[in-house]
Image (cartoon, rainbow, N blue to C red; front, side):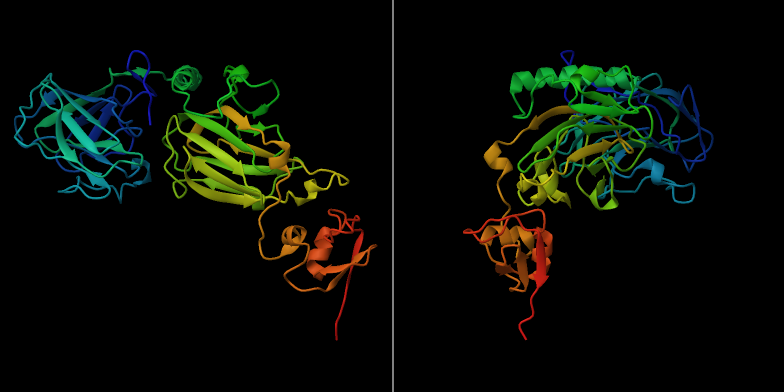
Length: 425
């Protein structure tokens, strides 16, 4: 979703034509002008997805007196970058479908040279076009739009040359400037609307570490802007049960497919087990969205976008931190901007109370976690705990408790130093 500034203009990267296009199209003027050489294979796309309510302006520069037919304008959820010259369609589909939304004018519009065609859409699914400057008319209604969507057009008609202009947005080509402007925009909106319970203004220094990020970004406001493909932001607080970390997406590179990678560092080390690539199989993520990472009592870390579609990422073992006599294991979250997300802002951190942080997980049907809760192992009794010699767990659970937990027997609670397997036959 794209918020608006006081001037009601969207903050966006420049809009021009995509480098993927039909072989009868020539691009010029920094890919803002498209000229048709011959008919057929004249499909064009915008270089990035257009934002909801963003106005796309198509200025007609040349008409052909040799050909007839209207210019076709529509939207597609297919990333143009995924096409090759072999798979690129020669024209748009005849009718709209789940990947293409092709409005048909209710009456033939008057296409004239030196006139501008305007197009926009709403998240509710209304596609509106103004062909002659008299005002937007709803040309098509589709299901609510929850995916990235590119503007597409076909010059296989009377229009021979067209320019893509953009006067209804604040065009900020520099990612740091965009991040800074969006930060002010979103912060002002949040202070007014109080939309996030996690918002905490400027956080204390040292809360985040930025790796390969732009030095000109607002580090004091916990903004990270990608400088290299290895750019990342590390949250310098050890994860605890019931903790929640919220970040906001403030800039994106729409030429890439996946969004970002989230991983958990254990004592500063990484592992594939605790690494997850966030892509469109998780959810559709766009500018202004808040992504939340929550630590559940059982150590499962979940991902959500604007509090919707909560999905598990990976599990960490927090049971070792329940015993004050054992050295604590530190877990930190790292957000790697190796995909579409190129700007992040740490909105805030929910720090759990001592009671919440000590909350043991629910029964999971076995393992040391269930043992500690139930004081008895549901997998049978085969592990003799040492030195107290209580028989209240299975051998596998007993090994997991060594040097990490006290005896589950509530009348004992002595530290466990060993476990011996017991055979009943």
